[in-house]
Image 1: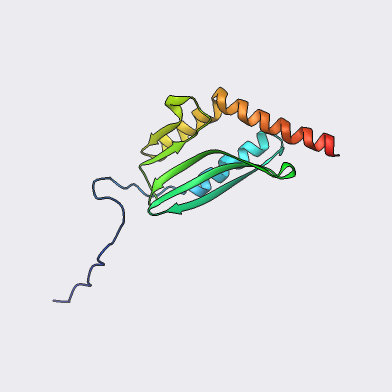
Image 2: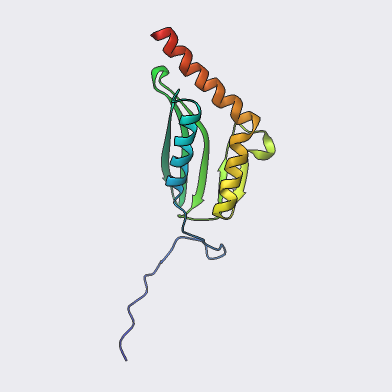
Length: 141
């Protein structure tokens, strides 16, 4: 009988009490959202997806960038443990009950992002930033 390979001491940092559901590429999903948003505002500003890892929490920050004003606004972040679900959307610009939304699957994540992007609070922020960027271009030449 062949000897079994030794198992690594820690095969995963994912808590054993949570069910891990990998398989979604968060960066790609958010980059697609960023590209769509840039088209909607007719390239008035840029959008950057910035990944940050602190201990075992990965944050994908959705940042609106106004380069001429040297201004960055983090619209929301998506926070995960490891590379899968559960995750949560953290959007400080939203009203209190919608500032932190837990999600447990890809379709749920997409639905919650859709709701957030259509919410009047998000529309107000995005419109103001796009107007600010356009006004600077007109004034600055």
